[in-house]
Length: 279
Ligand SMILES: [Mg+2]
Image 1 (cartoon, rainbow, N blue to C red):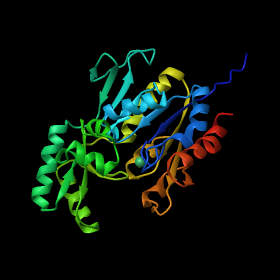
Image 2: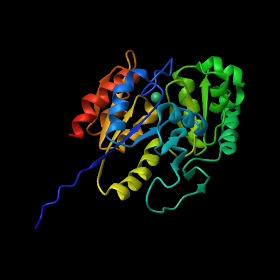
Image 3: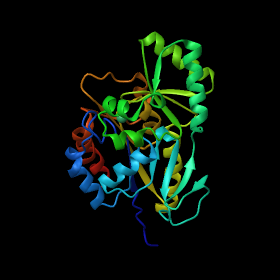
Image 4: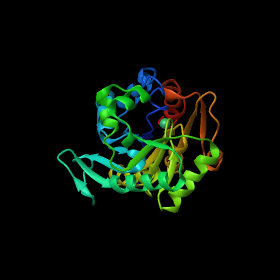
């Protein structure tokens, strides 16, 4: 009998802000060597962010990326039509995508957001309260990008006036209402029962069906990435200078901790850690 070696195809899931993109300038230039290597090897690179579909489409264009992506902290999974060679159940289809929705309808998110403000008396500023101009100067985005960032479908990012005590009260109130509070790089987020990990699980199954055997990598830099990191075989956490290490990180099996955040650290993570998995 002939022995058969099975190659486990790599699939990489990555966060954007503070991970592949610079936290302040949004540049990915220092990551170009690793991006080139990934493309050359034909490894699917799945972008997974708290950004909206409209923003992520822009980043996919800039990165020359045509793989599935995860928007709004796992609110939805967008799969280019015909990307997988087999049919699978979905929630919505557009001309461009087959879409799996995990998030809660945005108008419901906003209702809860208003109720949390009223009931806690804590001043919260959500993306829905901000004009395109205000959001643009707050995030260092141009007006078009800020407009894209406001096209929310499943998740409300917000700023909170106050310290640890206020954060705890808001978090408790959100959870009391059956929703989730999570922290990203710049903002707090109010969302439904979705997270990046559940979205990754769905894609893992689809990729496994396509490639038969896969091994997965996840790269992130913040609390909202932890469910994604728990769902992959090789979790990598980028720890920017001055950032604390989330305590819950320690419970993630097989974690690689890389000092430094953003595209330079991302480049190192891929070329030094991920590349050794693909020899
Ligand atoms: Mg991030």
